[in-house]
View 1 (cartoon, rainbow, N blue to C red):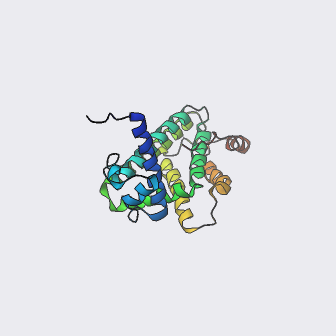
View 2 (view 1 turned 90 degrees about the horizontal axis):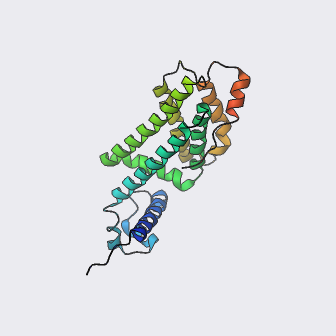
View 3 (view 1 turned 120 degrees about the vertical axis):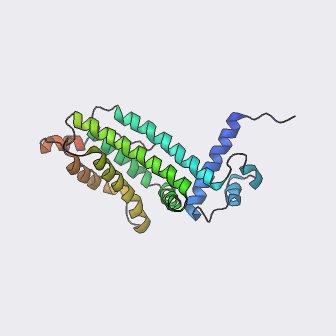
Length: 218
C-alpha cells in the first residue's frame, strides 16, 4: 500500500530545497550548480529531488513565481496608501533593502543571465518585469489623480525608468563591491523626487520625501 503524502511535510521539504537551491545558484551560478549539490545541501538523495521539482529550470520557475506573488501582494498594500508619492519611495526603499542581501542580489543577476539564454525563463522574467512596471504605473497614476505627482508625465514610461534605476542598483553591486544601497537611499529619493515632483512648493515636497511608506522587503 502506497504511503500517504503529508502535504505539510511535502511543502516544508519543497521550501527547504528552494532555499538550498537559491544559496547554491547565488554562490556557484546556475549552470555550475548540480542537482547533487542542491541535494547535499538539503541532506537528501538526488533521486528524491525529482519528487519535488522536475529540473533545475523548474526550481528557477518556482523562485520567480513566488517572487511575483509576494510583489503583487506588496503593490496591493502600497496601492491602498493615501500618499502615493510616498508609496513609490516605499517600493524603492524595499528594493534597496533587498539589494543589501548578497545572496538575493547575486540570484537576481543569475536569473537575468539565464533569461538571456533560456526562452522559458526569459518569458517568466519578462512577465514578472511587466507586473512590476504595471504596479509602479498604477501608483503613479493614483498619485497624479491626487496631485502628488506631476500629471504631465507619461506614467508607463516613468514607471519603466524607475524600474531601470532599481535594476541599475543590482548591476552596480556586480561591479562595485564598495557600493552600499541603503547609504544611497537619500540620493535615490532626490532623483525620483525631482523626476516626479508635482507642481507644489519645495517645503511640501520635502515633507513628502521625509515621510515615505515604511519599507518592508517582501
